[in-house]
Length: 423
Ligand SMILES: *Cc1c(COP(=O)(O)O)cnc(C)c1O
Image (tube, rainbow, N blue to C red; front, side, top):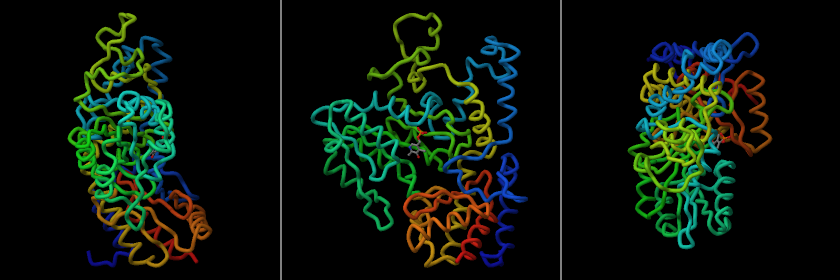
């Protein structure tokens, strides 16, 4: 292409050549006056697939027409409903089907996983997380440490960033494990850090932590549906994520949980419920708990069908789009284009905090506005007033997440041009 990158012709040519451009029409794009919003907030709440409404109405109709019988005779029978999600969910995160389950919410799953996989002893009581972790994760690990009678002031180890923009090198993680590894019961690490947008080498982190005898869990809130994952091979003991961000399954959507196959028949303690009971004998209603093998053995309750329907629709879209490899190709193009334009047109006004290497980031770029909080806030509100939606992180960061299912290169050009025109 011969047009300069900041030209409309260049952006439109990239969009025309995009094999996934048709998927945008499958989503409701919020409006700004007579135009579509430039929506860059899929890292916070993904947009609604148009097919969700019909899927929800189908469940309501089946409930109305069939009552309890819809468990067996509905269009998507409720009894094996979760089984329809198993294969696409496993594919999304690179797991075996028996390693994943959709249930509860992210933080609830994190607690359930820690009940089984955080077993502190006086010699090995600690949890390692990144400094500046998402508050819910920090609350969860801190409360678990207290619950076991240990002291977060000593036993919660928060690894400080060692790189200039607040990112963390693998070498720093390795050093922390060399120094504290013998005391660490659990390493809980993000797939993509929510604030910096940094992506981590999960396989390497699991390998390093396991070598020190630690259990490893991943929080994939910002990685699932954003990056290709190979959870089984990466080898973590467990992982949790949500589906309302990059997975477009709606506000507060049912979350995801991964338990590695080597724990499929574990006798570790767990908090149990009837839906985790062995499926072949669950309805004998016997008093003794016999877990169903694999991740489904951690289920507590019968699943919320009205909340799972949007997830079923969303996972089907991911599959039809060619899965994460195809989406990632477009995502790298979008984010690379955003990065190139920011460097070419906004240097000195906007600093990119997210790593420049594509392997160390997903689709999000965290942009720091030069001039402090008030200026950053002013820019954020200026963009919002023009229908350009990012999200704000105190004190001076605007996160922009172009997603491959519904964002276009021309959206990115519009964003950069708007910032250029801002005084
Ligand atoms: C979004 C997010 C959460 C949210 O937790 P919920 O239980 O889904 O409300 C937790 N942790 C991280 C890292 C997140 O990015």
